[in-house]
Length: 323
Image 1 (spheres, helix red, strand yellow):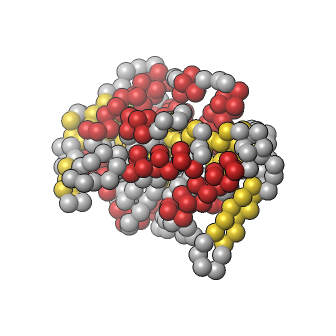
Image 2 (cartoon, rainbow, N blue to C red):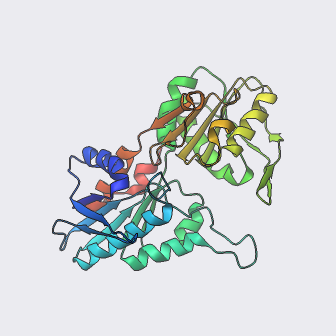
Image 3 (cartoon, rainbow, N blue to C red):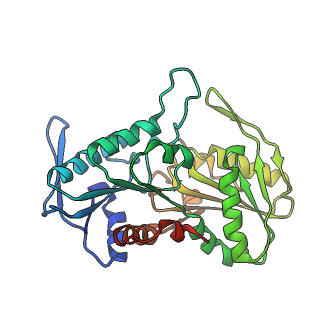
């Protein structure tokens, strides 16, 4: 087995390699004066099973499109070098939120990304907490594994809330299934039933509205769960509504902390006590200490490492995700 991590995901790749008691294999990424680039493995991959780690989000040095292009080129270079099987390990999968047509002639980018990865030569893909699991699974014709952070979140939360009265909240109706799954995971850890509630959410021309909560939060610890935090507006709106309705404490869980826009302003309010994310995306956009102090980053690399090992040895990913 060969394990590569492209440069901008090398830290996360190193964590995975450490869990697997391996070293990352060497590769080259070269930039040219006209903005073009090339990437290639520097080791023999003939007849090898190769895992390539690269998280697809914009950062201070590369756009999401730059990263996607580099990943596609590297996968193709591996196949041209006679790699037996190439698995794209993408902790955060780009363009996954546009999974259906909401207006006439809308693109369905989830499906397009699947086509690009498959055409480049990917034999399988591993990601984590995609926005719409059904759309993700329907887009790929190759094996596509979606890991989940809910057990990581539950392990972190149990010591904090074991003596409190928690309630699980989805910040919109579309996330109810995710909230219910987390309710089952956390409920088993606490050995009790937990209620699930949700908040109304309407979006029109980019403007989000709605403040009513379907459920009781007074004097309770509210745990808001979502797949990602982008601008932070949805989480901040839900936290403010909970606090207004008498919640004792509000915590937010989101696998991917993108933090675009003005998160330092949006998330600085007192309504939200903690924001728990994973290191699939580093929270590099946060600057204010008041917000950074709220953010807890959990390490998802061990979960990816176990998944990679099971895929290589023929183990079950389904059993890995079960409570």
